[in-house]
Length: 192
Image (cartoon, rainbow, N blue to C red; front, side, top):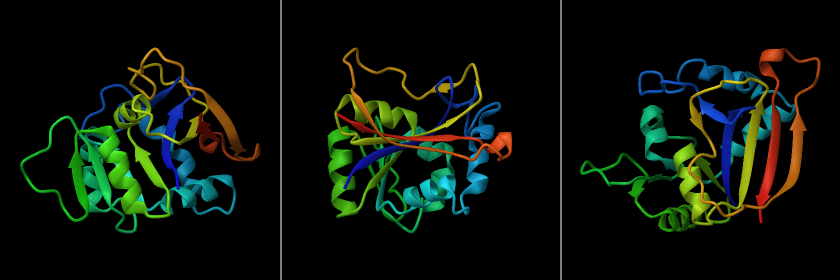
């Protein structure tokens, strides 16, 4: 069982383009980061990586990601529990199996318990940063797209000055013959 950050990012580290908002959740030019998902049903590397993400048994998301994604319509995938990491718990009750928490350790503990013997997927740059600072991320699955956005929301912004050591445990690439818009390198790291 692992708590695994799963994020798509540009080569220069952005997970969304500039001016992201609920109306434009990926910001200007940000949706091009997800062209590789068109291959999610392929038996190749991108399809396999996508299937692994959808086989997780719980989700931890930052509130910004959760809200910008339209709360995933109450279901990220297969009805798995969703733990939303937030600065402030809202007064309105969350839908379905969603719970809001303010503490990263509590978020990881709840998600691990909900996932049982399965993995937990982490979505959102803010949640990733908070969970990394708290030592609650076991692995990172990064989908690096060969584009430079130049501005937007950085994945690894606002981290502490302490070093985080990573061990590369898997690298998958799309075939060279594939459409340039769908090229991606999938990198899985173990946090040491």
